[in-house]
Image 1 (spheres, rainbow, N blue to C red):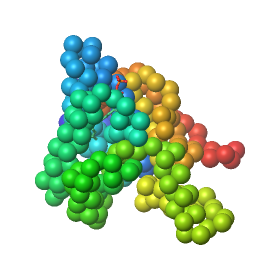
Image 2: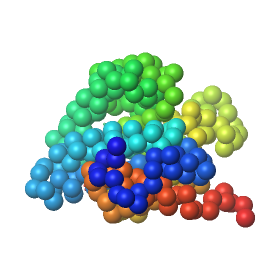
Image 3: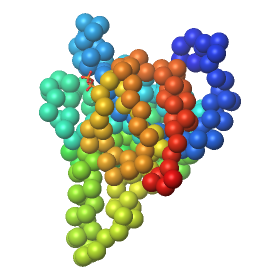
Image 4: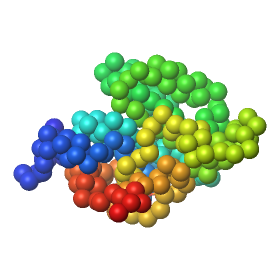
Length: 246
Ligand code: FPP
């Protein structure tokens, strides 16, 4: 049942579910870093790392659901990622296209609600239409999966504020902003996991991460398995979340 061989002292599924419940881990977000390095270390082109990264992502989402986490968010492509070599951008877009097709085909089995965060217009009319179709098709499913695509945290806030200005607002509240972001249907993330050994948010969920717990690991994303996921959850469950109180 585990991705890899289950270790004798690993917690059982029921134990993890109970840890997730007791720690109120409702929303987990992933910055899937390290695909390029993983591939290079194996003498493969960077794009090959993204291909394995998608497989890792699918397994991770399944496990999150098994553990009882109701919202998962991932950073698939940032507003800055267009600066990457054309061949790499093309391959990420191809993988996304393939992923969306599979998600559509597996809808009855997976029961995942897909929401794409970001400015989808720039993805082109075809991919845009596929994203919108999937969002509509899956809108009543119980597990929410936010896929950040052409997403930037600052861009998201600026767009929201400009929309409020266009509506004629002269004063706004925090709630107005929270309700105007791409993530308006999700609670703020409880835990943000970044793989690949970097210690930053890279323009991801800047507003929403106000009180998120951050977890960093050197593990490169394609190697992120169930054991790594459980380690992150266990550490999260030990954190004292005070939300600014005492
Ligand atoms: C970061 O690793 C990864 C990305 C910027 C792209 C991730 C995209 C995918 C896995 C494909 C599409 C996703 C889905 C959910 C279908 P990096 O390449 O920056 O790694 P490096 O730091 O080793 O170079």
